[in-house]
Image (cartoon, rainbow, N blue to C red; front, top):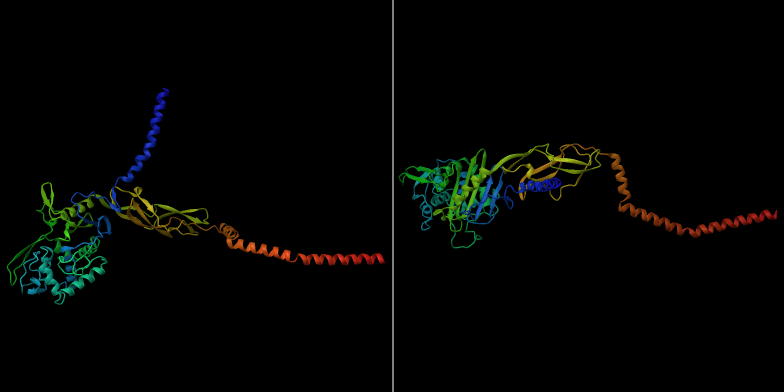
Length: 469
């Protein structure tokens, strides 16, 4: 019986030791990759990838998003933005010049088959721009809205992206074709951008209802013109094609692109359950052999990221104004040495659905105060901090005092006196006074002796005087 009890106690002890380990294991219940969530990207992951919640600008996943690369026909998003800034009359008639429609002869690039002196509407040219990714349409628009000079139009494109905050983007043309005569991206004749910059451009484009409508259309009939019969335009983005194996029902626009320098590219967006995400895939492969079939990895990657976002990420209220996240010392507080810190407002964040506030840690900046002066009022701002899950920044928080703490003036006075008494300045003054007193003591020592001898002589004389009488 005694051995049985010992065995039971040992098992209880082992279980109690293991229990904390199981609890701390929840810290790894969501995988991360550096500063972002690990979306467990498949084998077809593109060289550059970016997934962002467009409602809050929260980056969910990022791979080489700041690496400079060629934009290919993603350039045409900026072309459309500049055109619509200049003119919102979609029925405006535009004549296609011979120079514009033949400026791309010999490039073998995608065109809509526009003809010299053909007259069509701005709307149809924009459909040509977005659906078949027509470079001849881009050339016509650049000439039309560049006062006859495409370089003027390109200057407007570069001004626009600078205003959007794109730090690594510069365009050399309106269609996105590479300059094959140069290597790298230092030349002013070569288009360059990053996925991070393209996100800013895409978000701006998605705020334009016309661009959303145009880029989300899979097929469009182009009416007969003075030079051509009816034409049928089809979108190069298969995520919009319900008959395609790439199809994604929630997809919205935006643009495909492919050149040797850019690789296969796609920017796509989707809205579902009140959330909007933008996915960007660049430096992909146009033909990747997967299970015996060839696939465009940019299309696969964009769809994968959008699906992952809707399956795993949610907007949650993590804490309200009464949730004490930390505390800070209070100098001379009456009845309290510390004050609790709570969020100034409810903390709402785009976060992995498996995470709660209990899985997060509060990261205080280096300059966050260790103590605050009293009195401090309830709701007074103390500082800012970040809620973190591992290295992933989940939310920024402004921390305020949870309650009012009044000042203990008597304690403050004694502390003030103590501070003076122990200060270096006080010690220096005290030492100076002591030295002065010592100097005065020794400096007047002889004077005191002479005074004493004079007094003794007077007394002796007085004594003799009495004897004489």
